[in-house]
Image (cartoon, rainbow, N blue to C red; front, top):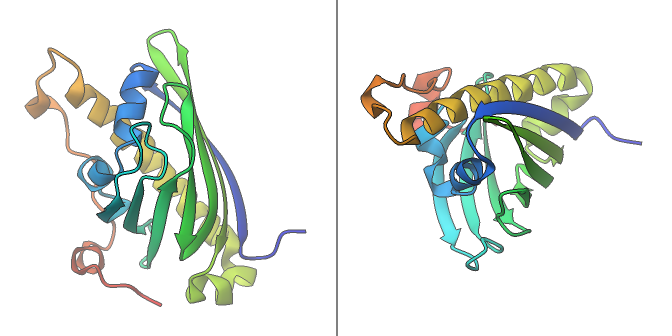
Length: 184
């Protein structure tokens, strides 16, 4: 039986581009704040990992729509390939995530399975009451991710004018996000 601090999410995105282009973006944690700034406030690389990405580690400072932030470490646990890769999360979130990519015509279908347990005191204390709100916060963050990834792929496509591509959505409560303030 899962507790009020355990979460299981499946997110499905469709973006114009190839799986190779998608893994090049999603597999580079150091650039997450550039193209997905609504969620990834900062990334501190810890370890580059092997040539296939396994063992790559980064310390992340993230947020969703709600005015709290999370600090966690991402570790790549399976090779970065055009069919997907897996990660482990430790810190304010503990668990695993698995990205799967499939070409479908001019688009890539992306599936993200995320199983985490919240360790941040705020989420642990209020999970029994606010789990649906915290789940909605995750869905909001992932919707911004699909939008931001689609924009990043447009920017990277040969022949496109990067200046003509809109900027990705910014974080909510920018005053809190800009300071990197963490609300307990």
